Structures are given as structure tokens and as C-alpha cells.
Image 1: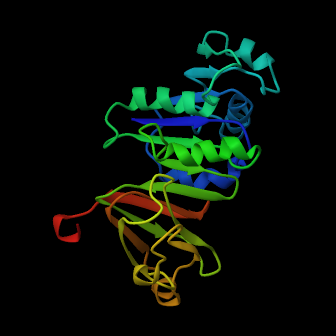
Image 2: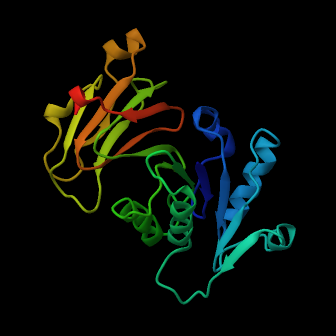
Length: 244
């Protein structure tokens, strides 16, 4: 099952997400978190009948929704309206519901659109969510695409140029440690920093770019975030026993 969450804050323009959605699984459910309903409406207009970007759930305190008429437009949609006095962000609430919808995380996918920039506390809460059970698998920021890569998984990154950044970050729950292997980067995993962010502003090697080979990033222990351009095409799979 594929769940898409639209939330507030800075977000990619709809046309910048064409690569992602054209290579993603069919969308089963859509959640709008507060002003993410404004964003959802923009995506619905852009994509038209290509994708059914109509909310299955509207959630949040609605304190930042710009077009309040959308609540009437989607009046028959299931909604959960919260009091502003709460210690969870609307995005966190949406992620909790999405995890409930998906059920089996191994076979499901949660995509978060937006939440990049805006207020720094909300941005940090999304980053921190990747250290909890309630997190997205893919996060579409304003300019970058973030992929959560847990132990036992591999990510193939294609459709990137040598002048585009590929970065690897640790989760907030792990300042050091973890096991990662790469192939096709300008500087490989043996040169990664042992503490903090392992690799920032890395890039595809000239050899792999010339041969049109995808960059391979594998995680054998712990979890990492891989940050790539919006235009990148990602293939995420499970490591074979030999690669574990």
C-alpha cells in the first residue's frame, strides 16, 4: 500500500515531482495535514486525472490552512480536527495514521510531500521522526528527495549528473556507527566520516556517469537517510544474503 501525505511548509512544485510519482507505486490513500490541503489542491489541479490526489483523510488543527473553503469542498471526507494545544505536529499525527493504514512496513510505502523549510522546529520534528516508528519512507522537500534506508536494504540512484549532490545522513538517534557500503560515488564509503553526517555534497563518479551506471548505496547495520535531487530515479530493494 502506498500512502501520500501532503503537509505545510516549503514543498516542491508539482512539475518537479513527475520523476518520482511516475516511478512510484500506485497511490492507495492520500492524507492532508492542515495546510497540506492547500498543497494537495495545487497538485490535484496540476496532475488532473493522472493521479487521484483527493484526500481520504484531513487531519490537524487547521490553524495554517489558507483556503478554508476546501474544508467545505471536501466536507464528506473523513476528518480529524485537533485543538491547537497539543504536543504533536500535524505532520506527526498524519504519519501516525499513515503507519496504521500501511500495516506492513516491509511491503508498504509512505511518501511525505512538503514540510521542508518554513519553521525550523517543524523541520527538525520531521527529521527526528525518522528515528521513530512513525516516519515516511520517502520525503519530497522543496529541491531534494530524501529516502530512508534501513539495515538490509539497498538503494540504486540513477538519472543524476556529476554536478548534482548526493548526501548521506545519520538519524538523530545515532551520532555514530552503522554499516554502509557504496559504489559509484566520487568518494566512497571508506572515506565517510565516522561521526555525524557521513557524507555531504558527494556526487556520482565520472566513470559511473559515463557508463550510465546507477550509484549503489547499501546499509548492513543501522539506518541512514540518502538525499538526492528531485529528478533522481530511485530503486530500493533488499540486500541478498551475500551482500548483507
